[in-house]
Length: 545
Image 1 (cartoon, one colour):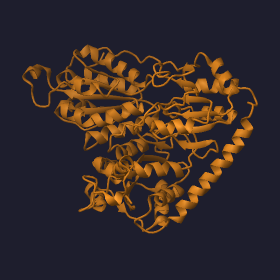
Image 2 (cartoon, one colour):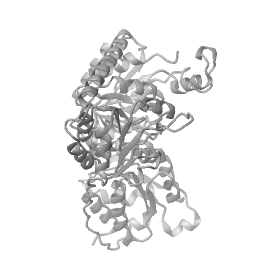
Image 3 (cartoon, one colour):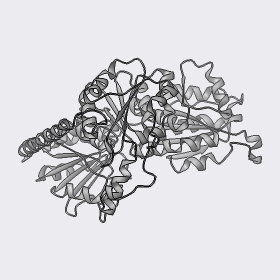
C-alpha cells in the first residue's frame, strides 16, 4: 500500500520511466515534493509546454517505450496541445498528466481550473480525470497500456492536486505483460498475389520503423525485386534510403501518388497511411492496382482505400513470415532489381552532380546546403528534421541504412524539432543527433534551447534560414499559376528585421556558429559526435526565387 503520490512514482518505475518531462505550477507541487525522495527519477524542466511534449515525443521514439509528461492545469494543457496533436498523428506513445485545481473549490471556478479532459480529448487516444485516490494506480496502468497499444499515441490523465496530496493508502496493481502482435491471418493470399505480380511496389509506412520491422521489409522487397517508396511525409526510416530498390517518398497529393503507382499491378502497403495535404480530385490509388495492406491497427486495412487482401498483425512477425513463404526465386525479381538499381544509381548521380554544382558561399543554395550537411554526417547520426521545403531536399540526398536514423512528425505542428532532438539524444545518448530546422519552425520552439543548455545535451541544431515562409509562397504560385516576381506576398516574410540567431543562442546559453560555405558546414556536421554540449549552427540560404 502507498499514498497516491508514492503510488504514482512506483508505477512510473515499473513502466520503465526514468525521467519526467514537465513545466510545473502550483497544482504540480505534490508531485515535485514527492520527487525529492526519488533520486532515480529525474525531472527534465522545459520553459514551455510545447517543447516539453516534443522532448517526450523524441524520447519515446528513441527508447521504444511510453514517455511521461507532467503539465500545469488548464494553461499548461492548452500550451501542450500542439505536441499532443503531433504525437497522435505520429503514433508516439505518451502518458500525459496535468494537475487539476483543488476539488474543494472547483465549484467556484478558481484560477487555472477548466475541463482538462475536454481540452485534451480531441488530440489524445483517451482522456480521463481521477476522481478517487484509490482509482489513480489503475488508471495510470491503463494509460500506459493504452498508449502503447496499436495504434500507439498519447493518453491524458488529469489529477486533482488535493487528491495527489492525500495520505490515504492505495493499492498498486502489478504491471501486466503486453502481448506481442503475431503473424496476420490470410498470409497465403498475400503470398500468391505478390509472387504472381509482374511489377510489384512496396509502400513503407511509419509502422515499419516504429515496431521496428525494417530488416524484415527489406527481405520482402528484395525477394520481390519491388520498387519501394516511403509513405507521404514519412516520420522515420522505414526502409534504407541508400538501398538500390528505394525510389524516394510519395508526395502527399492524391494525383501524384496515383501517377507514381500507376505502372504497378500489385502493392504491399505496410504500416502506412497515404496522408494527403494539397487537394487534387480523385483517390490516391489507380483503379486496377491490387492492394495488400498490412497494419497492427485492426481499423486500418480498408479504412482509407479499398484493399484486395487485408492483413492485421505484427509487422515484424508478418513480414518475416511473408519473406519466408515467398518462392525462391520469385519470377522476374532479379531482372526487376537490376533495372531498378541502375535507374536509382543514375538518378542519385545526377542529383549529387546538381548539388555540387551549386556549392558556394552563404547564402547557400538550399540543395547545396543539405547535400553538404548530409555528406558531413557520421554514419550513425540521427537526423531530426523540421525544415519543410529544405526537408524535402534533405530526404533526397540522405543515404541512411540504420533504423531510427530519421525522425520527423507528420502532425504538422511547428516548433517540435528542437525539443524532439533533445529528447531523442536523451533517449539514446550513444548516437549523435543533428536537428535540421527551418527558421520559421525553429522560431516556434526556441524556448527548448534552454533545456539543451541546462542539461548539456550535445545536439547540433542546424537552422536553415531563408527569412520567409517559403512553402506558402511556393503553394500560392502553384495554385495561382503565376510567377513569384509578379506577385506581392502578405504575411510571408521574416525580414526587416531578420531573426537574430546569434542573439537567440546567447539568450538561452547555446553557442552559435555560422559557416561561410559548404565546406565549413560539412565540417560542423562532421563534429556532431564529439561535442559536450549543444551548438546552434546558423546557415543563411537563398529564398524564394
